[in-house]
Image 1 (cartoon, rainbow, N blue to C red):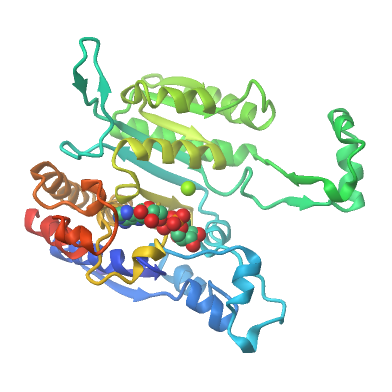
Image 2 (cartoon, rainbow, N blue to C red; image 1 turned 90 degrees about the horizontal axis):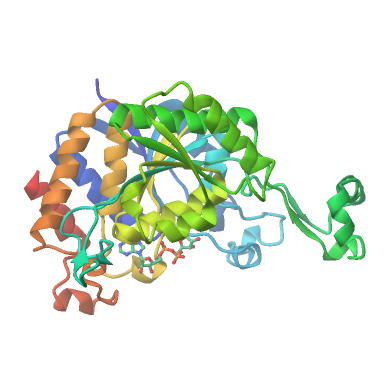
Length: 393
Ligand code: NAI
Ligand code: MG
């Protein structure tokens, strides 16, 4: 059956890495039709909406998308860039990817962080005898993607109803002397059902792919209600998976441990913000933004994206130098999701071969400054990287 995939290239380097990754999919003989969805800055400027309804309709219809990256700017800056006919008409910018996650309830975010042998960006550490060792990292972060600190329930200068409600909490006494307009409040809301879904998804993944531990990474000793609910949910669900150990860590300690013994961690579960933090931390150990891929999964729709942004600095370089691997690995996650894991493995093996051979390396892998000069200094172009993966396939 031929699938239809919605392509959402977005802005900047999203428009560069997505077509390269599609070439890799095609070389792996993945049969699909692609329809392009409008999303990003151009649509904000010209229509006052970075995520037009027609794009939502496409996703409702086809339910699966590859997303490049978008450019986001703060509210005022965004408003200033609206086309003249739309200015001062009350349009307010919002991040279309955050809105997609909320609209389609893409509550499960998976961010695998696995090192490829031979990647010069891999984490290394000093051994006892002064040598250097490179422990392989294979950690998969499950981030709750829709709630917590990113749910958008926040105020600067809350109205009286909210203020009065807050003041019923005994701990608000310490803010009693602060004028209402000088209070900024961002709520951290967890729901039990969402905790169950992310924890269950993590255990299922650990079971399917043979990970021996699931770590709940929160801060229940201080943030007792929300982090506490995630941990308690973990303890309940762990009972259904006798072969998998449940660990719990605090986010701060976890960030230290990932620089000491990252190889100890298998699957990690966290709420929205801590999941964002810990996944960037682990991504840094396995090559950084050029390698960091992700899946956003909901019951009705799934969107696969590299975690990097639109990197405007590099958007206009011709030829392009950015690393397409993060996007290619995101496509592999899409293949896994639709039950084509064998093809995903073939593509990952091809990436592994290219990285191990070390002959074709994007500028980030060579630790070069990103500029057109990088090519003279031996860096591969985006296209050459994709070509190398295709050749290895
Ligand atoms: P960014 O991820 O776009 O770029 C940061 C730096 O990382 C780049 O300057 C470059 O040095 C490196 N980098 C990124 N992707 C790379 C790749 N594929 N290969 C090699 N190096 C790469 O983050 P930045 O500069 O903070 O944000 C730029 C724009 O992207 C902003 O408008 C931001 O809002 C947006 N953004 C969008 C995201 C999304 O679409 N999901 C995520 C993060 C940022
Ligand atoms: Mg992030």
